[in-house]
Length: 269
Image (tube, rainbow, N blue to C red):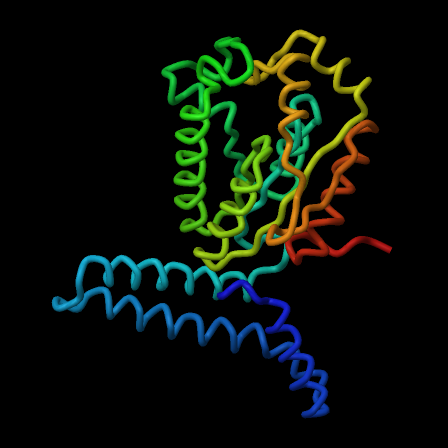
């Protein structure tokens, strides 16, 4: 619940070793779910108390919802656990294609900044809105508004127990941190996949007629690359996905990363 699943695993392993009861590992998910449900009920009752202030009521409700999701995480198999996943990368890196592939393979709901930005502007995803880098509906103010709406929608989907992908450039470190903090606040697992492709492949992709909602071209790619903030201390460590090859190969890389994070089926023999 507090984002330290590593400590939870360490405690479980130490307890099982001390008890000399390796078969007891099967009981831990049920114990976690039980305790999470108890905490959710306690927080829910607290939110109903008439003397509770509005701020305290909101905190109690948020805690109750997060604990219900902790319980769901403990009981679901990895490929069905609620989670918040970021799929990012520069324009032309293949992030949207990967997001769609993961949605089809592992039941994610995709919330894309390109789509949300157009909707906020009163446009359909297919409408073109080309502009210079950082201009038009791509100014910093528009980007702030877009990410705020993306995370608002993601939170709504998480409360339904959904698996959510944020399909976005995630160029700035603060947006990657925001994704992790949103997941932590809701008691779900998270991870970030960052797509990369060779310059030649990116140029080839961006030269083709565009069918999706993105307005990016080669100049936008160059400017975005120059402003890219690489992952640093205090950020979740991403999994880098190379997308130059076939789509199935790209998808396989991502599925292996999800398995490491406890969000996908274990790799086959």
